[in-house]
Image 1 (cartoon, helix red, strand yellow):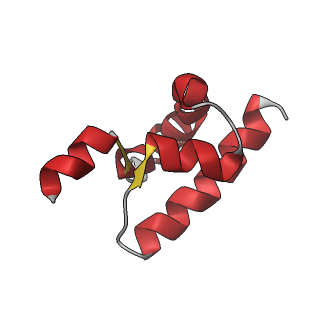
Image 2: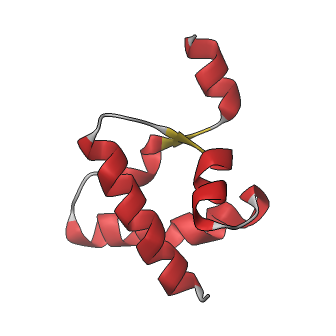
Length: 73
């Protein structure tokens, strides 16, 4: 699957997360779309660019480190 297709998957998952007032860890997101968490940054970049281009809230802020989640609990 190409980067644009993965970014479309991520976009939909982030919209759902925003609607449900939830965050996703990098690991969770990677598992949901079937990729390694290591390369997730390059897949999030097109989503961020689209948000900036369309002046919409930056959805990628919903993706957090598992360390961040641990600190909240």
